[in-house]
Amino acid sequence: MMTDDAETSREERCFRFWMNSLGATTYVNNVFEDVRNGYVMLEIVDKIFPGTVNWKQANKPPIKMPFKQVENCNQVIQIGRNLNFSLVNVAGNDIVAGNKKLIIAFLWQLMRYSILQLLKNLRTHSQGKEITDADILNWANNKVKKAGRTSQMESFKDKSLSSGIFFLELLSAVEPRVVNWGLVTKGETDEDKKLNATYIISVARKLGCSIFLLPEDVIEVNQKMMLTLTASIMYWSLQQQEAASDDGEISDEIFVEGRENETGLSGETSDVAVDSES
Image (cartoon, rainbow, N blue to C red; front, side):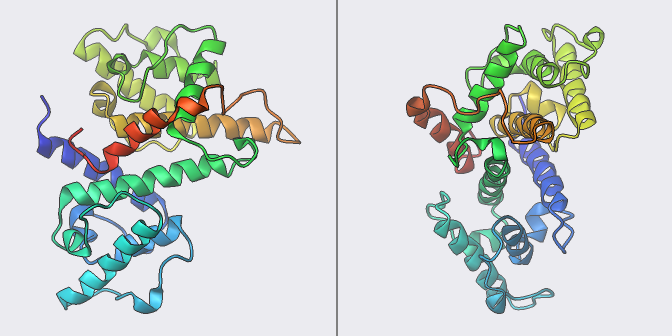
């Protein structure tokens, strides 16, 4: 079994890559250390929610006085609360103290929001409706089914995803030429699963998807990373269809019948943000 330290280290790497990809002025070398003064968190928040940071009240590094670090982090938490993030019993002091679980929880909510906004901002997002976790899951299942494949996923923590077959079939569905099935294993043994997971990441990056996860995230079905992987593939696919359509009309339906039943799935995925042990 993976240790908590190993999982935390892997998630730190994922979020570090994601934060640095946003183009903030401050380069993040270690998430848990570099966010403690609150300034880089304000930069990341400002990249995702432009105009929400009050820079007149922000303290720029180097910050020698601890209470000024707390001021920065308090503003970060307040912005999160204004955006309805799940931040029960979370305060700026938790970030300053380097509480890894709470830092990951906050960053996950930022990442998830950023991904959903990218999808929403596409012309193809269907009449201005919000994109939900359920929409992403349904899109992926429908895409694979329409391609004549049989794999389906019940949720983003479906243990069958560990074989890697579903994501390879999804990638093949969005671009039939991209997967060399001669390199794909049955995904039954740990070694075969790792080969498939590594190939998934390679193929997705070859397409141009923004990928921050590791093969272990697929093998162990990291719920957060399964959502981000699926959403990244979805975003790439819809971008391609928009580029090929003068009027933005596409055949894929992002929103499918049964949206009234999506609350459980969306809430289930969101729970990861406040319980990193799930």
